[in-house]
Image (cartoon, rainbow, N blue to C red; front, side, top):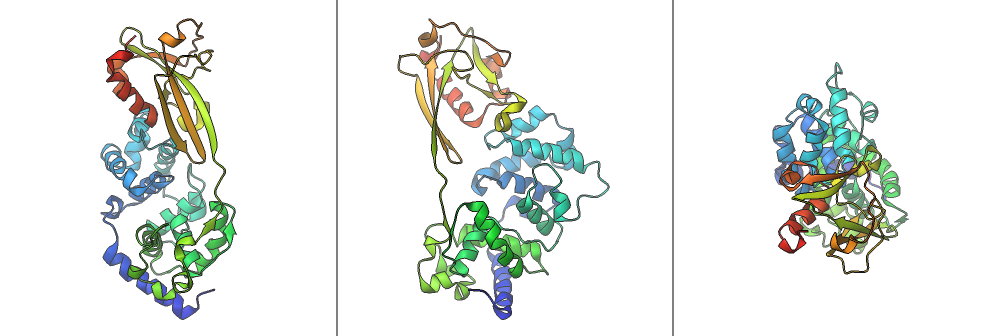
Length: 345
């Protein structure tokens, strides 16, 4: 099903009226700026809005401009990102700021935005339309869901990227060239607040009369996107204390997402075998399509093994723990374990 010109105009008008009345008062929408838009878009990659809100507020207090961010030490940048995950976003944002401040003008097209670190097609379209008023259509998961339901597109996409690619021509066709930024935000807002994955609030939708899925079936089953195969990974780690110091492992620049962050050392990095004793704790977490089980072993259980220390292994004074950059889960675990006197060795 495709929308004709009259329906497209109706959709554009209804979307803008709804958005101006119902949009959430998000901090980057208050006194908006190019910098706020760039920061919010990079933070929102792989992160839910409600999760990133306190981080955005703290970030803007510490780094209120491209200039202040560009001049900040990388350790400070990573520290203020700690807990958001996908740390390459912080490094990309830092590198982007350094490039922006030496330009006569920021990029003036979506294509030129994509030449900067961490900026792909979606982010470039969002920045250029929202902050610069350029006619670029934004297509994220929310927009894919909205368009699939509007047109009752029942095709099964092999992954999210395939769905985005397929839906982009329709998003371009529907784009309101008079207000591209507000139109894109309205589309994403509608998907995030009403046209949700489960239990969509169809009765409140401003464009319900155009939605074929709502009229003909169950919109909740759309879009159909194949799920990635989940992989399970187990990592054994060590909890080693010595005279008010904790052994941590500093990930190198080659560690991609975890570069520059500390973690509890893996037994592999120490050249140790998994002990037969019961671990101190077993923690689980998920990263995209990976389910990671991390078994944390006490120093006592490793006492009879010869440990091989590398330059990345560092004894960190417990008083300094809060000042270094730990990966989010490890920060929680370290804080939890330090409250248990029985772990002291």
